[in-house]
Length: 207
Image 1 (cartoon, rainbow, N blue to C red):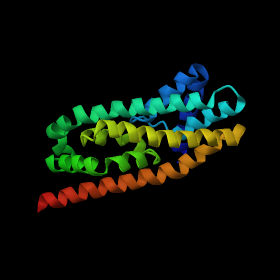
Image 2: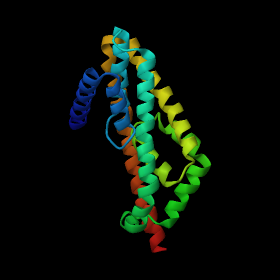
Image 3: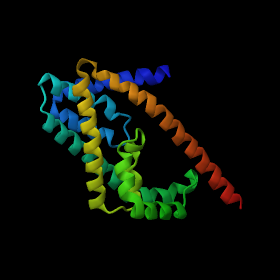
């Protein structure tokens, strides 16, 4: 837990320095990274930007624009990584990760049927938002719908965090407590899900 607190503090300092130096492009860069596999929670980025709006240094609408474009850009990069690299990796190395053609087909079917809600809701869940775009690309979700629901979900979430930063003012960093409180249980649940996935595949293989 101590390591996690130190990591969050380091990331928070990085976010502050990046936004302070690059301003709006800094918000764009950080949210691009946040939408990929980098452990950079938006809860540590957007409240500080909201605080700068509160001080009058940033414009509310420009922060929303920069953050939403960054979220979209990072998500699109991850989408194409999944689309053009994921399938080849699964077919070549999937057996080492207990993945096969059946899993690929299930992923494709899932995002073709429920991709809209999955992408939108995933933007509000810590850890999940960093990873969800890759399986969306792997599942060949409709690209236009992917972009639409990514922008909708990201804009709603980013705006909420900006608003929190504006409301809290000098105490904007209090939002990180939410990140600590939610991210750890979500990570544990994902780890449990991974264990179940491995157990199920081993069991099916024995059959």
